Image (cartoon, rainbow, N blue to C red; front, side, top):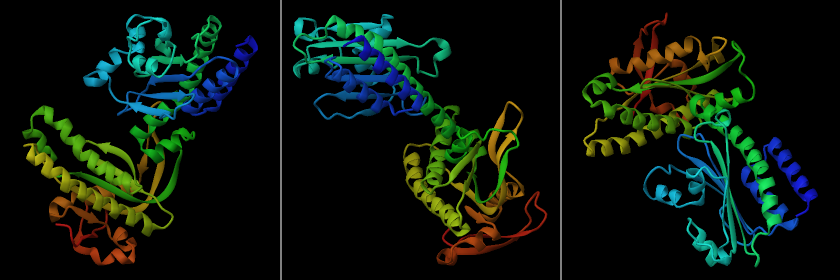
Length: 402
């Protein structure tokens, strides 16, 4: 590979990193451009840990001949088979020995002593090199503290010294480009996990000015757990978090499946909204989420009961009204949420579930906006005074709700 080729590919990597080109495309195009320039690559892989509630990191693969999965997300490598595989890898060797490069000339007598090397050797690869580019503390987020990559060739002479020099010069730029894209992905993940999809999108679009909010009409969902306080007092401390996680997952997954947006978790409570151009569509979506929630509870409760663990139900209040949706807080600590009388009202409606012994209550405004084909299931439970709300309100439930 000539010096001008290295400069050209390096410039291309920089441009793609700035553009935010997807990581697997970066690796694939990088390997193909290197081959076109005379560097005999036949296999390439890059991986980097991330900051994600489920995945430990993402890996990207390329092969000159075989069709292989270009992207895969991996879980924890701290225990079990995943830990054993990681500790046999060339990447672990580099990390554990504070190294930057390790090479195995598989076709020339070097041992196939790392994970995957026996398969590479059996498929005709003659040379293998793994590299690590570490990040300083200022460039580390979560477990994302290093860029790992490896490359292999089937060339009869393996990698030449010129090939190795080219890789050593180009791979750090590849790592920087992939890291640039990964940082954007991490920002989106963190925002979505803590704010919800819609609020995250708006924040990442730049709507972070304090007091900047829009008036919207939305269906409001407020739910909490039945007898949570007494259950938390009786249950062993180590059971409380798994208990909350199980039931929060049931609620949140149901809301998301019906295209709702969870805005806030308040202890055992969940505040969510459903937006649509037609109020009937938003109401239908909220009722669809309620149906999904009950189905999830029908599965979850027998499982927990069979394990001798505490079970519960969910109280749900539904309302529709105008709210302000946006940033509220101080100059350096903001919350992207909804505010307005309707928010207070929906929480009061949910709290009335205990008094009228129903697991779902709806405001009269919500009941009036329910689509015609769902109206037969809506039934009045009477008028009630809601704490903090001036006017008494007729509340409704679903006729199938107990």
